[in-house]
Image 1 (cartoon, rainbow, N blue to C red):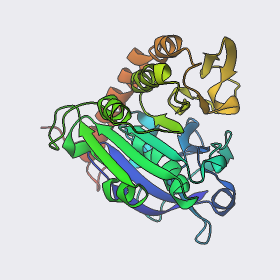
Image 2: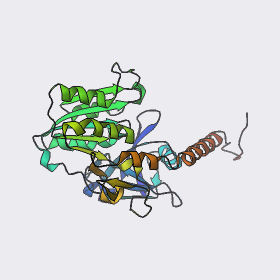
Image 3: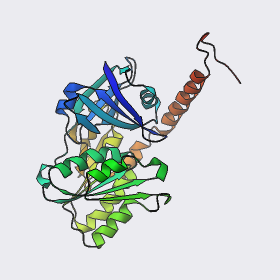
Length: 293
C-alpha cells in the first residue's frame, strides 16, 4: 500500500499527487515511469514520473482524469492509500551529454508534466533550455511557474489564443529556428499528432529530435503488445525499449491508427464512471439509498 502525501488540483481535468514510495524515489530518473493500481482489483496503469524527493521518499505524478482508474485515483485524498505503485520502469532519457548545449523542450497539454522533469534535469546540468508549451485554452495551463524556473526562455501558446498568444508549439519552434536558433536537440512530449508535427518540422533542418511515446503504453511490461510501434523499420515496444525514440524514425501514422483502436470503449468507460460518481453524490450517508430528483 502506498500513501498519498499531498494532492493538488491543477485544473478541471488534471490532478497532481505526491505518493509515498521511498524505493522508487531513490531510483527514478527523468523519462521513467511507474505503474499504479488504485485497489487490489484495479487495472494496472502506467504514468510517467513528474518528479521525486528522495529525502522525503515521495514520487510526484500528474495525470488527467480521463478513464475509470484515473478518475478513481483523482478522487483519493491525502492520507488515503492505493494498492500498488511500482517502478521505476522504462529506459531513462539520455541527456547527460547536453551540458552546455542548447535544447528546445516542447510540451503539449499534459505532456508538459512529463517534459518538465526533463527540462529541470537539463537546467541542472547547465544546458540552455527553451521551453515551449501548448494548451487548448488558458484555463488548462499547468506548471507555468515551475517551467519558468527551469528554463532560460519560456514560450506559452494556446489553440484559442485565450492567453494572448494563439497558435501551436510548432509555430513557435519554427519562428525560433528561422530566427537563427541552433538547437543541439529538440525534445517533444505530448499528443501523437503534435509530436509528428514537430518531427516533420525539424527533419529538413536535420535537428536531432527525440519524442516520448509513453502515451501509447498500457501494460508497461511489453506483455500486452499495445505499445508496439515501428521505429526505423523495426518493431519496438514503448515501455521496454523506450519511451524515448528518434522522432525522425518513428512511424507516427501507424501509431496514431493503433491509438484509436479502443476509442469507443474508452468513451463508454468514462461515461459509466461519471454515472457512478453522480449516483454516489446522491447516495444518503445514513441509509445508503440513492436520492432521485
